[in-house]
Length: 343
Image (tube, rainbow, N blue to C red; front, side, top):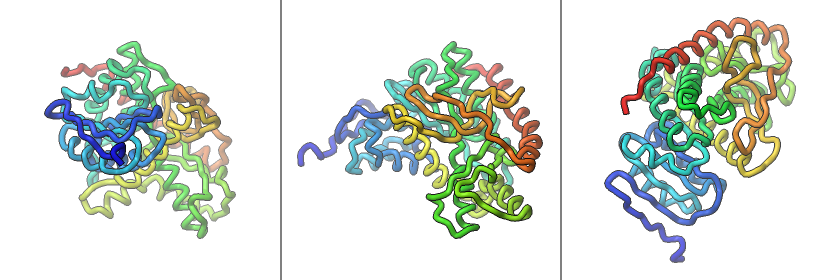
């Protein structure tokens, strides 16, 4: 019984470690761990036997979150870090960094409206990664993903630490929504549905590929259009339903957990781990970042599976999405090139 007693170790006023056991699995840092996505995501990650250490970082409130999670009888060692001066400490020795930090969407806001707030936050966090854990795999949740992933890559390039295998925009929520909505329409178990989603992670750039749905699905042109529109606007659906009290936090946490655990399995050597993700890419000419199916491996992106075959409707959706996607990518690149750290 004594081995299961949780013993807090106070390192300083704003850092606290809570340990149960220490297994040689994957070490994960969550940046923005006290927020609406960060807390449920940390809870889900704490439950996984694949994770040996969970470093939680935020500006405020992290110590309490870490203390709370430390009472869960799973092996992962939890450590909370409060405040910017402990950011580097939170990143030491980690294999995976997950970034949900930033402002959430509010009624009337688009993901692009968040850019001015969240761009600097992501740039500063990724700059810290470049300095402390340049070989870690970085999964970005913070919106607008279409723009902030290019920011992250450009920051790594500035520090000469860029590895295109290491940086992912986590678009898994689009897959979860597509699978769920198709299942609802057909009275299926969503766990049995798999539909790839390509493009980006905002509005019309989100393109679910019905032609690749498994099991195969049949629907009218009207139904297909309504389905696609719902997937594209699902984030807004949640923001409106919460009446100003938040955005898609719980479903995003679930989806990010799915991505991180797949990444953890790949790091530990499991073969053929696939997921759709938004990555540095040459899949579509003149588009530097694109979401499509990829194979995950020990170093991050093992193989880009490229653009699946598209039916005429999907090809039209892609053609319509590319100008918006290109504009959002360029916005991120321009920001990163001008960015100067305050530290």
